[in-house]
Length: 150
Image (cartoon, rainbow, N blue to C red; front, side, top):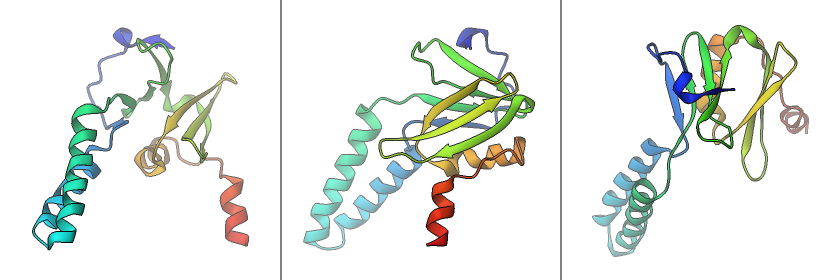
């Protein structure tokens, strides 16, 4: 754990993952605009979609969850918003994405025996970079294996 102000220069930033899914909200707004011109019933649905998207974009808070560079991963999961966890890719022993009812967790086990976890909202947003920079270190979730066998 280090202070955010002490992070090394993020020169070659590959990906930043935010809490708010801006591209999906903009797509929802565009679908809502399209619904306005369809018919009167879909116009009501369009107004609701536009209202919800605008509310989410402008009024709900957003923050950075994770930043990836070719050298390391930064997790902003601390209760103190001025702290973050800097994890070098070679320090990762294994990682697992866990699905839960309230929110999903990305759990990373490190060489020193400690582990870091962060709430995530989509495996797709982070898995690509973990497969690329920490290959072969994923621990498969047992729940998926059980569902596939049934």
